[in-house]
Image 1 (tube, rainbow, N blue to C red):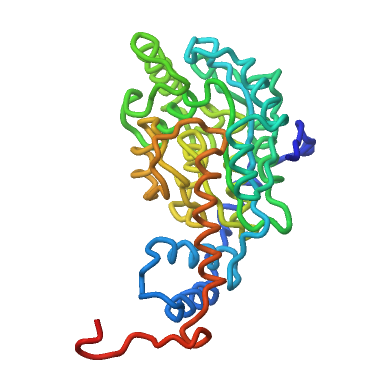
Image 2: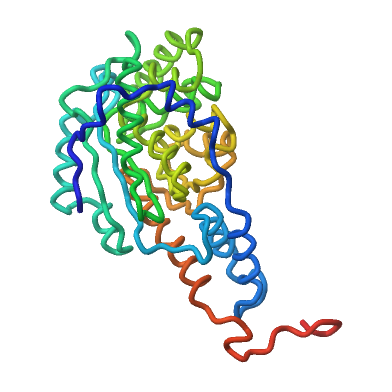
Length: 352
């Protein structure tokens, strides 16, 4: 595992420049997609027999801009940050757990470490000023514009030359509270619609968490200028970094696998700007966090897996990576009917 510890992004990260990238998003490479469709039709299997795996191979080819697609160098990037709103008692865990879990990642002891080993993926963990949490968004904006721009730019550094698939995840005590508030501000509804147990709150503690989300949204809702402003007011540093990574992956033609609720909310900031902005992304799984299913409906995404997971740390995305790698391996490695000297199906009546 490689760790990136509060890397220097530069003091002049400009939010307007980052926003400007949204006006020039590259689309899929249709020639690569067509080549994938043509090959799929010649492989030694009945048409459609591999189900969604066939669509995944085409998706990877289209967004990598090449055929066949490859999964030789996948990266799992986990962004870690702390949230000032934890002072409101929204989590049963103290904010110190964020740094403790980062240390666990570095020692190889977390679930995501085992999944990366299983699927031969590089794990990078990006610490983001863990000693300096965002501000409590029920009292003011979570961060300033410069902080948000720096976090977005930092996230963009996760997309490096040679990466062919990017899985994104997060670690941060309190971030399901931030995610719920951000989703509510972006997509409407009530705080209760978006707020769930996170790391395990229930009963009166969950009701208190819902009230905190409602307070934050009420404080900022009328003043929010655009989705990036919502991110500044209600988000977190790691959520901004995820949005930056998704944007950089689009510009660099790297397909993305999103993890659970908080990760998907972070990416949805871009969807709120441009509904096509997440076309290069798939959602690895549907989290047990109840707001995630509602969010997926809002952004028009069908999760690849639904396993009742709610761990975060990129774990669901890393499990889904195995499915995507399987799809690419079948597409690239199977023989065609011609190569295998296998008769294709006959045309006409009775051929079934």
